[in-house]
Length: 403
Ligand SMILES: [Zn+2]
Image (cartoon, rainbow, N blue to C red; front, side, top):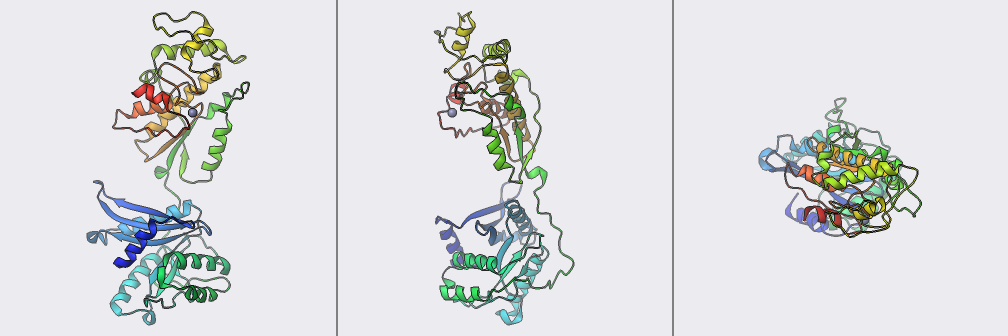
């Protein structure tokens, strides 16, 4: 890639694109030194990847960095259920090369990709000379699957690639001519270098690279409809429906954690109150804060209704035995997910009841325990923690607890 091409890609990257978005993969060593980078474009319709380039550190050309980046890209392309990866590659054929030195490099490149089953498309005019005299093969890697590159699909893909990736080197006339040459199912060039010796590279993501997903399975017991209850079980169901379409989450069971971890964030008396009152209410009725006494820690009201109001921030958060059980189980889930970060890059706790409106001493906004604050407090023993609160409302809970 020359400087002009590099600057084309960079300026292209800053423009809003409708048909694709960029995927950047970076290879680092243990000291966070960048060893290599892969830039690819994920086109949505049709769903395919185009590899823009792989660049590695000058001194690391033969260190397997390029291979590692390409294998990671294959995993990404497979996880997105794409048709495969396409990319331009200068020719290894004598008649289409400028000189022998360049041809040697092209042979090495095509040989490298052939190990993955990636081969140039055959029988099209893709190799037509461009305005800067460059000639490329369009190489296709079907990620170990035998995709049929039907003519219409192939035309669409080539149009997208030439329109978005070839810049001014391909005029509309040029694109039309290449497009016209695509007829019927397109075949790949037979293997030249690695015949019968292709690498069996798995395209699924290793379990330890997946995002740990901890779901509060018992959330369903907490469902109160009597006051037009907004916070309902369908929330988990609809999020899970989307997550289940992806292959990079691994669902893991939650573990039990002692109350003392909660007490690092919530007032001891509040925790005891919540546990006791919910047990007392049971599940045949649901109670709400209706009367709000003046808060005087030295004189806690004796009456149950007044006590509920004393610890509550609103009139719509329901209290019953299941509310406690479900919110306590949600705490176990977030702590399990937090501890999973010892071995995973990412973890996601999918829980309800929610938590971010719960303050140190008060429940409200359908929240009882501030799960994210509890997880943040737990993780803060290992290093700095940031909470990114994307709720529609102000994160009063975290503010009260940490500020
Ligand atoms: Zn909210």
